[in-house]
Image 1 (cartoon, rainbow, N blue to C red):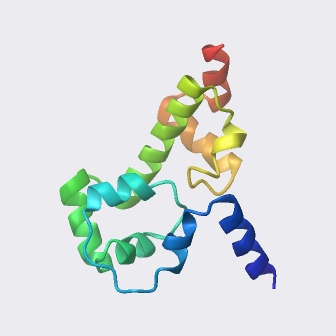
Image 2 (cartoon, rainbow, N blue to C red; image 1 turned 180 degrees about the vertical axis):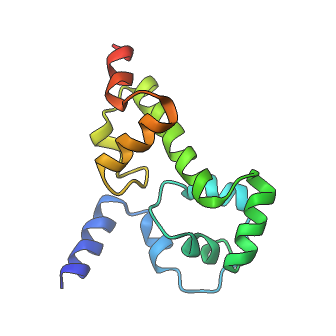
Length: 130
């Protein structure tokens, strides 16, 4: 029951997830770059990205490295962090308002990853923008 309620709430907040969560058809092989740029913010296992892009996991990883010159997990983390930096710096968004929308599971992990990549905390980005 709780899972159903969580899915309903998630779909209410993000209706665009419906096609991502409930497309059970065999997908055709999609343009990987366009697909990832559109869907990078979803917190989904790499296996799901592979399936939804129309590839096996090994094919997905191989195509991914060819396209992005990086592994999927590293690229996803860097892309999400870059988007977070942009949202905080240019749009004055607060870390607690964006971390979930960018695919981070918790605020602590987001802060740690951000500081490791940029050498400063997300809060310091917001302070510098003001």
